[in-house]
Amino acid sequence: MIEVVVNDRLGKKLKVKCLEDDLVGDLKKILSLQLGTSPGRIQLQKGGSLLKDHISLGDYEIHDNTFLELYYL
Image (cartoon, rainbow, N blue to C red; front, side, top):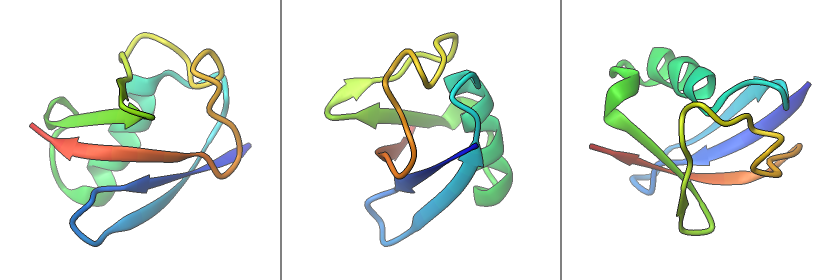
């Protein structure tokens, strides 16, 4: 189990527990429940690169305490 830190750049930092085998789309679903918005309106980036929903967190080399940027569409 890993903990990912998500910054929405509006003053909110969320810590989400997930697995490295989880897909980015799964992470978006967890975030949407915490934020009260739909997963389709969430865009995640790591180091300026857009993360695609069908790729796992491990494939993007997202490990424990990795910081991601969250943008609303």
